[in-house]
Image 1 (cartoon, rainbow, N blue to C red):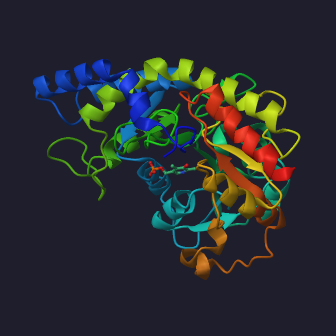
Image 2: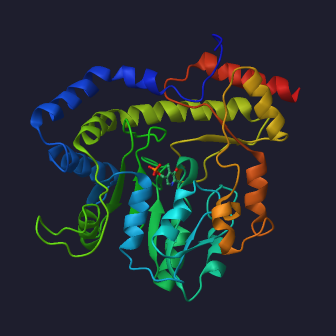
Image 3: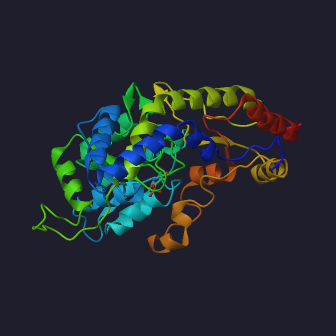
Length: 367
Ligand SMILES: *Cc1c(COP(=O)(O)O)cnc(C)c1O
């Protein structure tokens, strides 16, 4: 890559900033002889719950398992429905299908998240839960969604995979629903060095069920109460996550400063992700809405700026979703969104020089 290239991520450079601490954390685990469900996982859960402002957290192997295991705990039966957003990562829907229910989608609002005004029409007698997704690190319209869920007696599961630390009216993602799921995948704002995930809840029953269902349904060494999976967060990842968590707020502040700078510089050329009232977005992705998006993406790529699309094909139009019977005309806002979105490089080590390069190219493309 040329010297003025702007890659999409800078993961190894970021790891290098805290490498001595990470290595000490790994060494401590190696020396301890406790590699699964030991003190590091327990401490990380306690710290993570505190960070989100909830009573409990349970570490699991990845974000998809987190969603799947919480949904399995609801005892869904064939034909039961769970409502979610169509423009998410596929795991939001696959977790519903794998838990034995039918994913039902609702169209987006102008914020790119589930539109609460369309939610009530999607609720049927078979609806068991609502799973809003806090896409890009911006909370879905939780007050409106919780009011609707309350009227219908529905469980609310936040897919907070992209939203660690994001707030709405000062309240963090992960503390709004009956439970919430986070991914700690390397591309998420708080990340492990491999796969990891975590569930937060204020409900001791949800917590107890999770702790058992991530570990074969075992109540203790001898007694298995229900068939379940092995989906545990290992000690080395937990120990490294504890290091990362100590830096999260500083890294998030830097990411937000850069995102708001992008907003000001790019506003003349593309649709920028302004925050709504009460919102504090953590910009897990920085997504603009661009005219002639495909041409712009190609132009940026040719000039060394790596971009992605989150996500190019909405879930309801995936081959895996064929049986659900959706068509391309079902969600006009989603289709419009999908045709315009472009994710630009954003990470806490991005420099102003790199950022200016991205802005310059976008402005020259539209001139
Ligand atoms: C990343 C992500 C997941 C899945 O998490 P994994 O840890 O990759 O399994 C689920 N939902 C959303 C919205 C995500 O961004």
